[in-house]
Every structure is written in C-alpha cells, then in structure tokens.
Image (cartoon, rainbow, N blue to C red; front, side, top):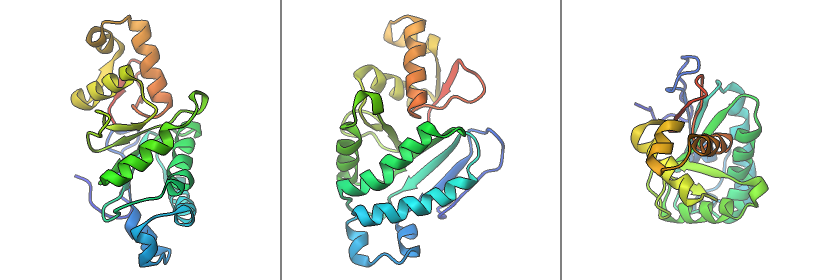
Length: 203
C-alpha cells in the first residue's frame, strides 16, 4: 500500500516495490505558489515544480517508479506539461539509472492536455507516460502510442508482466518483433525491465 506522503520510498534494492510518490498540490504549497496558481498550473509553476522534483530524483534507486499524484489539481496548461512533465520524461529516458514516471489521480482535463502535448512529439523524440486509469485512447498510457503498443501495454497492465513469447502469441507476430516492440517501450519507460532481459513488467 502506498502511503500518501510527498515522498515515499522502499529500500529493497532493484525491487518492483520501489516507489517515490510526489504529491503535486503539496509540493506547490511548499514553494509558496498562490491558490490562484494551484487552480490552473501554468509555465511558471511547471518550471518551479520541475526544479523541486529534480532535487528529489537525486535520491532515486535504480528502476524506481516516480508517481506524480495530481490529487486536488483540476486543470493544467499545456505550458505546464512542457516545463514539468516533458523534462521528467526526458530525464527518465536519458538517465543512466533507469526510472519510470506514472501519473495518478488525473482529471479529464489533465489527461487531455498531457496527451495532446506529449503526443505531438516527433518520432525521433517520442514520449509515453503511464497513468493509473484507462484513458480515452483505450490505454493506461498517454502520448504517441501505436495500436500495437497499446495492446502490449494493456497486456502488461492486466497480467503484470510479459515476455516476448507471451506478446508474440497474443498478437500473432514473431518473437523478434515482439521483443523489439517491448524494448522500444522499455526505452520510453512504458514498461520495466530489471534483471531478466526477457521479462518486462507493468509500471
């Protein structure tokens, strides 16, 4: 069970249970953002919160999931996503210590804006972010996602993990194609791969 603190950690190395929870509303309050700003998060707020979250990421364990909790946040501006969520996704993909981003308790407005912003990225700079809900695109993820990737992500969400053999059988494709697809999703941090190169876990 995840305790709703601004920062929650498990110290079992390389464990699937390692989670850092960041409550956006609480973090915004801690940096003295006004009530008006909390009602609609904009570029200025995005920059501030990204800096604060980046400080917390210094304490990340390898393969940790960073849960961004939007509880109490009704809406965000596209510029907030540009300044906070996109840089976090960039860090997760580029960091030598693998970690993963997951958004929880998002409203329909937040879902729509996040999906629009990160879904517009070019193929060479593609982003996917996981969520705790089935979104309007039929997936527990937002961003630039193909139909096959949606099927793979949902398979992992339902079954908690998947191998290339599982996906090949499920989608009626070759194991090589299944493995390549899983690896692409891992590189975008939409699935987790820890010790075993053949086993991919849901986030």
